[in-house]
Amino acid sequence: VIINSNNLPSGNSARSVSAWFYPESGNGNIFAYGDGQVNSRRFSVLMTNSQNSMTNGNVKFVGESNDHFGHTVTLNQWHFVTITYANNELKMYVDGAIVDSTVLGTDLNTDSSYPLVIASNTTTRNDEYFGGKVAQLTIWDRVLSATEVQSQMSCPPSASSSGLIGYWELGNDANDATAYGNNGVIDGAIVSTDAPV
Image (cartoon, one colour):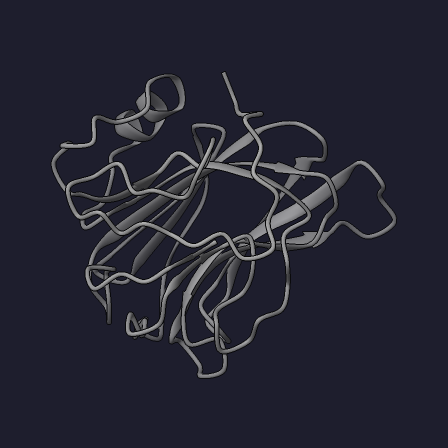
């Protein structure tokens, strides 16, 4: 899904991105935006294969040569990932629990002039396709608290929630539920109503 937006968090600004994902293989971006060919200009969450495992994969943050974390998740079940970032502090939550955090030595300089892509790499790369399903992706212009991350797992946010700048349910289409109306274009993906309860 390709979403052209003029309000994605850019540069080194504060942000949070959350999504439900159902990995059927251990490869591919759950979401990505920015420039995937220039160091520190990309903002994405990538699944990679767990070595010698047919049942697990690793989820990690990729900032394009400013990459961090690596958390093992079970394939063929729904998981919830959230990345928060502000003041060079990067945190990753999986299934509502914080699994890692770090203070970056190099600023992110995310290039928001490129579209948000769901289930693939940035449009400058067009690779690392996600093998699985993605649902209920949200983007915020602020850092979500641990309580807010946990709350989102059981109750999706209101489209008018403070700081919410994009919300794509992805059940029947790629429309943005917020007032910003950054609707996406489905490009090669198969739409499914299968989603986390």
